[in-house]
Image (cartoon, rainbow, N blue to C red; front, top):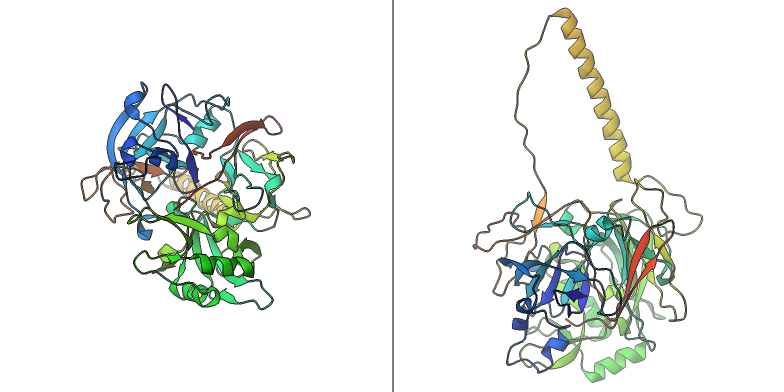
Length: 491
């Protein structure tokens, strides 16, 4: 991304749960950090060197689901000009400044590009600010609030880039299936899936998870958080050793070589909820879970296995390590998403960009197998039933109203008060410890730090990626902006 005037280059990681972009400030690298800290953190943004930065103050990061995983942080929130892509690539520049959060915390080592379609309110609920996708749609660069994303596979010999598509998906990057998921009721945990089973696929398969659970997909974090009993099953099967001091499964060279020799592949079976309906399998090899972490005590980088112990069901999370082997398509216009096995085509194979228009525009294809027929979702059926029911009530009220006017003369007017509730969450950032109040929804919290608010609905998005970003045209006049991200991440 280019941020500020004159533009400063930063690399960001896609966040499926955030609605705003977070960039690392110069304060994010201190004297005790390695000399190449700014480069390791994706580049830093200095607001003092931008003539278009408009600071709104310091805020606490509203980490809805991440706070229960132990993440925290604060940020300097402001409005700033952004352009998708690197300088000289000709990426689209948004016509309206975006909400940008400058962070120093190392809980999020690289900044993020929010993909979530919720508007951002900084100080109150009455002034929502559109996210990246919302601006792309307002500027008619895309015609629908959707994105397709896979994190890429740098562990493969060809080091496959990630893929991020706005306003549709890249059909060359996944295997279609017939399973469609609907959003969860809690807008801060919208991408919920049922993990029905996790097993190995060797000649003697082992079931690692047998009791289905519901987990939240969040590419903001790298790890996969599962029940303690499931983690212990991984320990027994793979020979992992839990390090209590770091709360990680560190992997030494001997264990790493042994796991590579086993060529282990893990099958994740996912479905809508914990029972019933169709399921989809995503195969994840050990190589995708061979990650490295920089330990804060020593600054040494070491291998670790990204399975984490979740102490309660609110912590069950599927992080971006999983999305190296899975393709996520999220459609905010319809409130649905799909998860598919990712494909890694050669660089000489062209993209198959498929725009997905908003329902009011036209009927658009969604990722599914050929021969499958679309069906009404439970939400749509419920909406139809409720509409019919309300229509009948309205007809009855109208009948009684006119009947009473015939019997009597004139009924007195009835006054009343009507309250409106907005389901909102926070979204912000700064440089000190945060409170554990992940669901604070008001501009002023218990600890005195202000929190920007993210509202449901609207046209909202943001995007991330590194190396290459190429805007390309979709069909039928709808355009999809595609970014091929380079090597991603770390903890």
